[in-house]
Length: 379
Image (cartoon, rainbow, N blue to C red):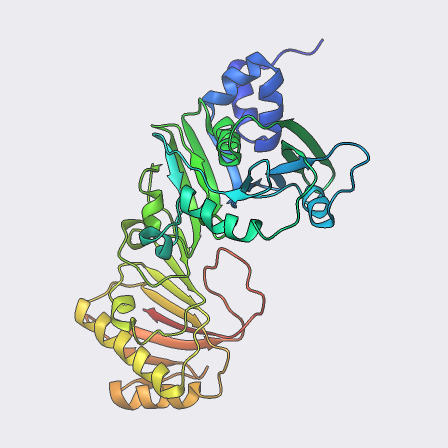
């Protein structure tokens, strides 16, 4: 006869379950639900978009489904939107899109840097859309429904609910269901690149341990209300505002899609992160030389510690040998057999500069094209 699991054994098993399976079992088993809320909730990848949440390999999408009476010809664009999961913005009975947000304690509104100072509120957005809707032909009457689409690699489930609240409220309730009653959530990667102008609700006091965050163009201030148990290890951003504690406290910083490095070169050189990676860097030979020279001088002035590293994807490497030669002449560098260079820094330390054949920086998201990497490291 098999013996039941002990309480401690059950807790050990629960923490390694897939989070989506934990949610399913927790909904139908009261005893499991009690233990599920105690054990830290572990997620490999949590990706938040305007009307979709992806947790590991499972997607939860909210949208408004237009339900037409039988026999009524459905406009093609509405039929396509219904198939794709419904509209991702609120609409009224006349199919006019509008924005309506009422923030309460625990709400986090993801804004990019432009939206921090400018946002079209509900009434103004109503007028904006109405300007176009007045020119349209009258549409057949439809019934608004909330559509929840849950899909993974094996199956897809669609459920319709009565439209009783605004769309963003339903989307908020989905993440609230995931986080509600928990003490701690562990996330390997929080991907917010597509989360601009969306909102989630986090229970006050809930603690997060997050290994990596992909901010995209989001303002890191949006995450100020998150309670972090420790600094985030890797932060990836597409913006050049590096002065927020979330960015400065990260051990590794990844700067993506950024072209003008010399404009912010001094700020980059003075960042406290142990490893900074720029992916990619598009500059001329003279600009690259100027940038590397600035980094070396700032590191020397600040007395940066061993292991400090800066790397950058460089699509064109034909200019690198000449850049290294001129750096060697200016800083009395030593050329090594592998065509790299070692430049004296301070306190018996050196900066080792080399080029690898493929991009090797600490990216959180996969690069579409592998390109060579220029690497600078204090040894």
